[in-house]
Length: 286
Ligand code: GUN
Image (cartoon, rainbow, N blue to C red; front, side, top):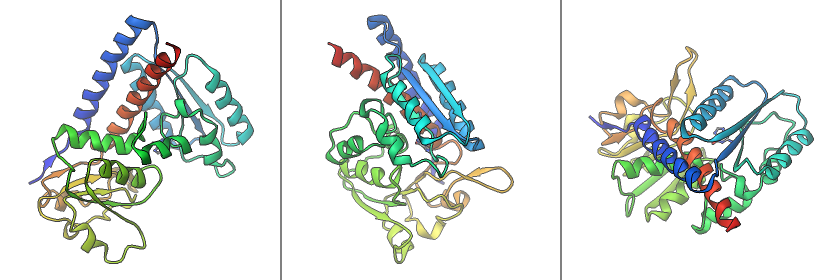
């Protein structure tokens, strides 16, 4: 039986570290890290994420602002809000919850956020920095996966790592971070021929597809580490990942459950990025 990777435990470990560092920063400099979260529309999953982010800010001792804007908010209105937050001394991180309504161009919005406040690390400058390994922030979900590996002392160096999914938010940066750890990385996607043959090579298999039950036991090498980034809502309202967990845990050495695996890590890393941004602001001042 695989060992379950406990994302709640690791996320708490990270948030406690952020909380302690924030306290120290406040005492030494008076600076309080500030995060603004913007949600456009009333997607229920997104509302929950935004609420969780607000709670995490309170836990860590951050200042936070949250904006829940109506579905018919125009792109110009959203850009104006971001412009004001870019100028706000209190705000170190700006997060616009994705997906946005269809009439708003997400990349236009992302590029309007100052790179030093882009705590998602989605804009051109931050993506480019990650490619070169010269970054201040890492995108929260792949960074959270790397923290899980580190906590469980799973070394990616020299390993065969297979990432299934090539999104800009998860798959592509995930591949890059594993590469920075000197893994041999393969990225698979919907056009990959004989996907099971490729995934069976993986010592570390990361799935970020968004399809329940997509990764079956026959696609997993015995003893592999299985990281499930999928968050899928089933018709009965339950959340499940991409991996057939019950069968996979019989084969893998380590496995992340859904919920309670990668999910909590995303928010913990957002807190870490916001703290980093506040510290960099101080550095620029001095
Ligand atoms: N929607 C799903 N994941 C994310 C994320 O990491 N950041 C933002 N801004 N929106 C998301």
